[in-house]
Length: 163
Picture 1: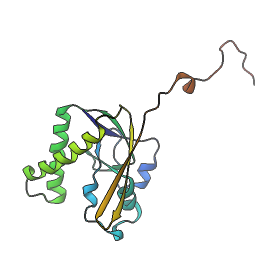
Picture 2: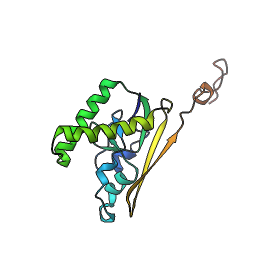
Picture 3: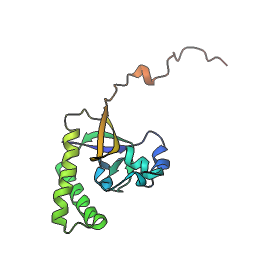
Picture 4: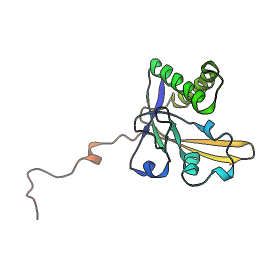
């Protein structure tokens, strides 16, 4: 089973999101957060979270890039339990049982999106407001096989150094 973790290539997420996700935390789309939003809500860092942010399932912060990786069933169950509690605490779900159904759907949707992807595939999300509500789009970026010639410094140890 595959899911995705937050990944950072630089510090930009620390500057563009109110609450950035932690590197390595499991992520889902998290589009539910924006279900009642309108154009007036889309300003500054909130706009950035709406437009390009995945939702981290530990900090409930946002991240631009995620990387697909293996997840174990016990971890999935822990994520669903945590997201269920988040729905009760933050969104006022009437009970953990009610929240669990929605949390399970959110996590399973993400697992379905990640299954079949190669490990380390990067993913991005884009959202826009339409008359019908929030429209999400997803993009995958295949992992590149980095050869040693791309990483190594070319030259011979026998060559004299030039100053």
